[in-house]
Amino acid sequence: MITKILPIALLVSVFYIGSVYSSKSLSKKLEKRSQIFHDPVLDNYLKAFQSILDLRKLKVFVLEEKQINGLVTPNGNIYITRGFINQYKLGQVSGTELASVIAHELGHLALGHTKKRLITFSAVSAISLVISTVLSRLIPYLGSIIGRYLSQVLISGLSRKDEFEADSYAAALLTKSGIGTAPQISLLKKLEKLTGVASSTITWTLSHPSPEQRIKAIRDLEASWTTEIKDQN
Image (tube, rainbow, N blue to C red):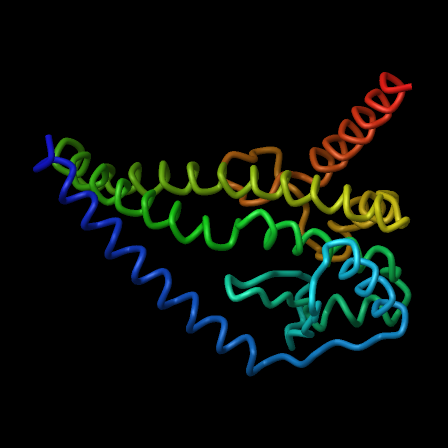
């Protein structure tokens, strides 16, 4: 039994070391292409988050990228792309909507998603390689394609789960800070227009749930909170 598991464990270790190295390399590249973001409106929201979460410091960086995105790296840096900031300055995105993006990224960080992804990606990649090798012997050429596809489906499924969890964390943080979930929902409604990317009806290979799914989950969460408060009274 051990002899069968050992090769997979070694593969996982190799992929994990590679993922950690790539992650550190990416973090350094992002730091070089970014600067600390300062804005009177957003700074107040950041102070509120910092107080609620009992954080020493909460810094957000502007990443010099035209695309509209927000991300967090395993070392704890939160980035908002220049494209997002430009939309904010043009009035297409409100301060509270941008704050909801930061709250979402804080959710990923607090829930350990960035570090967890390194482990899950390594494990899935190793298992996928084994499956692809076995299938390739049974179904030449197609076997490796099937293996990679299964890997993508699994990783995407885990990623979508993380997105729902980060949305829930952000909803709680926004509510506690007095902002509420309305900006979170309004941003999700305009996300496709802002990014220019329409959501697909085929979701099992996507890393993010559709905006509609995310909005429904947030509203269901709010409804559950309302029910709990009524039950307590």
